[in-house]
Length: 237
Image 1: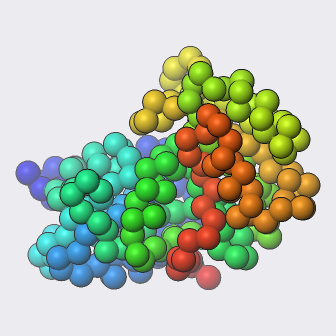
Image 2: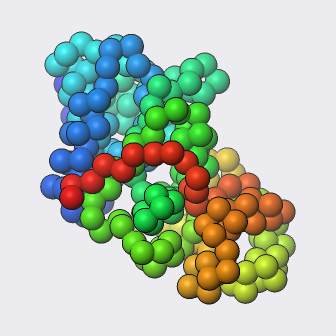
């Protein structure tokens, strides 16, 4: 049963700047070509782009396969009748995703939805990457509006906090979950911590250096800091 035989999936919660996001979503969906494998990011903007992509697949009969970056997106693909695959079986020709912050060098903070590790896997696998944002996501420096999400082995919670206090002078906090006691658990079974980035953290080091420091911190299995990737930013501006 395809998506036009049932109700379309609905995004849970409100979508900020929805008109601008729909405009950007249409631009990226127009790039799809028959036979492509496309990495599908998580978040509200990616959701709108996925809807627009499904409309093209239905109306033009495109044969595309999607690599979802979360269980949620995989479910939406199923609802829309889109074929899915994984990195085990295919490499994306290109991918699209949203971002929480974009700095002038096109470094990103991603991960409010908690899927940043799988998002980064698909991001790294795709030779072409498109980031879909509205004007509110552009910042002068990372950390102005959002903390950096970290995925941490649960047993290493205190160890990671102590290490980052020593190396950066700041400690991450456990992101509280909604609808359950305790913190957010990722699809890989890790805890999500949020690391604030006051100006002094990036005063003496580049974003790339911070990314390396975080990835070399024992107990951290992934971060929402996306640095050094070649990508194209699509916005409504």
